[in-house]
Image (cartoon, rainbow, N blue to C red; front, top):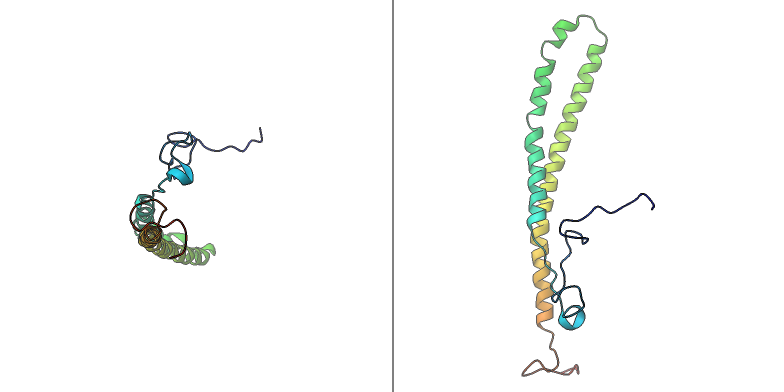
Length: 147
């Protein structure tokens, strides 16, 4: 064995996004003749957006906590030359915290936008298939010839 493996998926060997075609995996009812439905949910995208927003909230008080941790440090440090460096490091961390919060805010909005885009694309694709006529499917059906 190569040492590289695939983690087991909940509910079997298929990845979390896999949807079995109608009729199961035995070939009956699946494929082009029976057709399957690709189903998706906005749930994973919305949970990811919520997670990004959660990170924004969790990082919110960090800057203030960092400030409180540095209070009184100058008075107790005396003539330490590292004190100036500590201020530079603190400022750097404060910028990083704000950058991370901004990135998470942006990511949350983008993840939520995916659900809207996905729904629009689904409706467009569904509409294009609704216009397809299948031979023998009722009045006005064609056998593939151009009208």
